[in-house]
Length: 104
Image 1 (tube, rainbow, N blue to C red):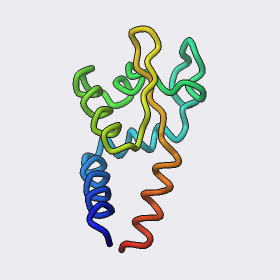
Image 2: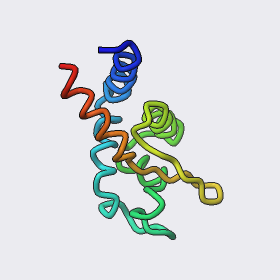
Image 3: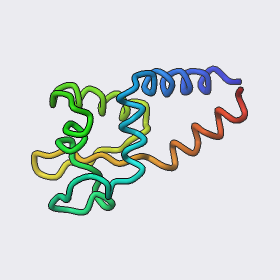
């Protein structure tokens, strides 16, 4: 395995190494399971305030969790006004999955 691939997997595994971050990534598979918001979550992503509420953490902790997942390229962020909305990056998750399948 190339060094870049190893580094990529380490980054992803670190991001998923916290149970709440792992749960958040799972929750985002079904954005419709979150409360309604001004713009459909399926289109723009789930508002951070809804992720925070489900995770039962402070706003700053939720922001840190999402920043970690975003740095690992597992989620994307869309800003709408003052609000951040998050979606899974399904293409990148598929690439990571394939990389795991060929590496382990």
